[in-house]
Image (cartoon, rainbow, N blue to C red; front, top):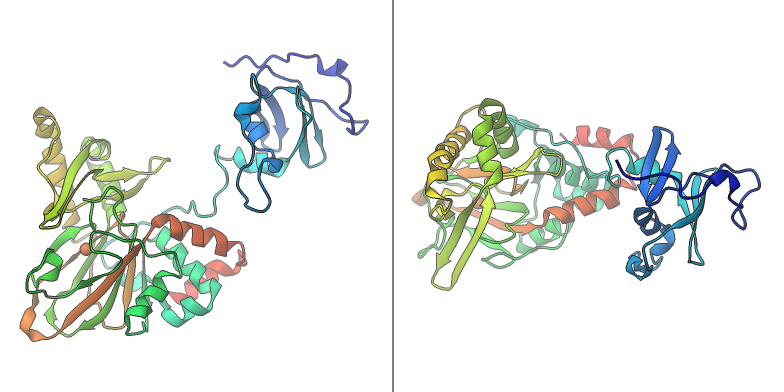
Length: 402
Ligand SMILES: [Fe+2]
């Protein structure tokens, strides 16, 4: 229990200059304040309160222009009271009064974090979900902030969306990606083309089947949101296979919690080597968010390096790993479809596991052009756009597009 005894007798405390004459001063603790809010009384630390002062933010840059380390001994209140919709704190040894909107405090105490409209509960999906994927026309995404907002929300909530009536050009994909953020480079540069190559540097550039994977875990920051723009697909075979890795991982947690814990806790190595590069990185197979929910998975048997966990740990880790890989192949999770020319599938590369069936190379042409943007840029886009979208209209607009 923190020592939160008042250091001053608030009943005897003189009113702060400028304070209303009839106010209830709050008792001052040694390190913070108990503040009565609509949901009850909540404790706030003085450092936190001083940094939360809206005046610490520069109105032009909207960045913090206050250095709390310059307050010798740390901030201490000499009085605090509630004034209609604000908490007012007069700071000791400073010529400064903080006026903090109670709405800021009310929002923060809900779960101890700054409220975030992008903190949307993931909607897990299973086999046959392809027909339920959100669909938007490229022209609509580019013309309407409401549609762009719904598009970004679908990527946060479902991890996947389809863009139809794509412009058949390199620039078409760039314009679409830029609706969410800047294109981020990977080993292959800013863009990659999935088609047959004479000397392939990736299994994707062959006609072979591609086992379930997430892209490039060999890079420290594996790509976030992936775009695959189908420019041509007239081959026999080559169906796309997609599944929600978060749904599969949550199923593993339910069915084999010990295996889940191993995959969520330990990192394993991935590599990508060729003549001109040698990438290596460690990743957890199951990624958890700060709330302990599955936010993603990392799977790539073709880029998996020799396991470097202690050999005795592998006695348990490998069976857990194989069980999860086997689960991903189960029909209950997989949705199978043919990606048609003019369609772009957009998905969270950390959550959605994808693969491809083999195709007959001589039967036609198959060309997908791809790129990535960061997951953070999608959440940023959603936060900005959702400020301007009528909260009531948003779900309706999503429903209309599905
Ligand atoms: Fe891929």
